[in-house]
Amino acid sequence: MIQNSKVLVTGGAGFIGSNLCEALLNLNNKVVCLDNFATGKHKNIEQLISKPNFELIEGDIRNFADCKKAVDGVEYVLHQAALGSVPRSMADPLTTNAVNVSGFLNMLVAAKEAKVKRFVYACSSSTYGDSPNMPKIEEVIGKPLSPYAVTKYVNELYADVFQKSYGLDTIGLRYFNVFGRKQDPNGPYAAVIPKFVLQLINHESPIINGNGEFSRDFTYIDNVIQANILALSTENKEALNTIYNIAYGGKITLNHLVAHIKNFLSEYDPLITDIDIRYTVPRLGDIPHSFASVEKAKKLLGYVPQYDVKEGLQKTIEWYWNANLKLVTP
Image 1 (cartoon, one colour):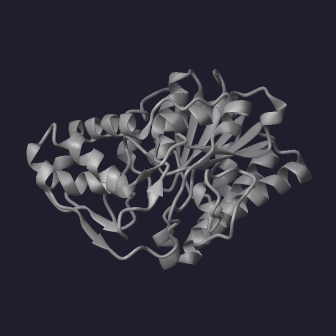
Image 2 (cartoon, one colour):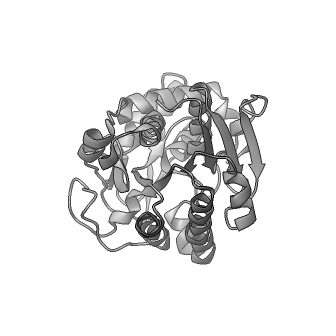
């Protein structure tokens, strides 16, 4: 495990980034968090601010000077900063591209100039696009179905070029529908699990886009943390400069997902059992089905996902309830 190192986490006040910051600090690393708080939250890192090994830089990856400042003296980079959401990218492709492509390139250049040892970055399962293959295997992708998917694929291409051209070691982690503690349930681009949880806690009917038979490989946050730590720590040369699926390696329909959420929440509030589900039209750019092979990550990184979707949901719902999510309004 990586210890006693200095690691930059871009997007470190976001859902995934803040969990990674906490995990790295618990392993006795120095952590630099770079975030512009466009989607990140101060509350996600409020318990970290006072720690002597934690440094917050409020800055934007679209600003190259901020990127250079953030990588100063850093040994490793965990690049999580991005503007997520397929629907957001459909509504505003210009900003999505500016953050996810230009910002990513800024970070690559800054990391190269600072001579960081390794650049681990967040990819996306949206890269598989219209590929019908199941399960999804890293080397077989289709055409992107959204501007967001295009940007995340461009990240992979840029990382490959920077390794071949400048010798910057990189690892890309294709996340599959990550969920868990600290994920924001509010706003028009909230992810489906926290959104459903919030609606049900407020005794509102969850709204599913489509007929609910679209399926996803939902991945609990602790599996993702494990993968990032392994990517930073591995001494296996074969594991470098490639892409990995990071998922549990299973799939569940949205209908079954909502049923599990209702079941777990009803332990806290029995009235939730009788709340109906509403359905509306599918969203543009959505992939119908997503199911990952994680064999490559298991073989080269030693990745062994610990939590399936039901175990992750139970932990997530317990966290939301204890965090008084029921007092939050959409």
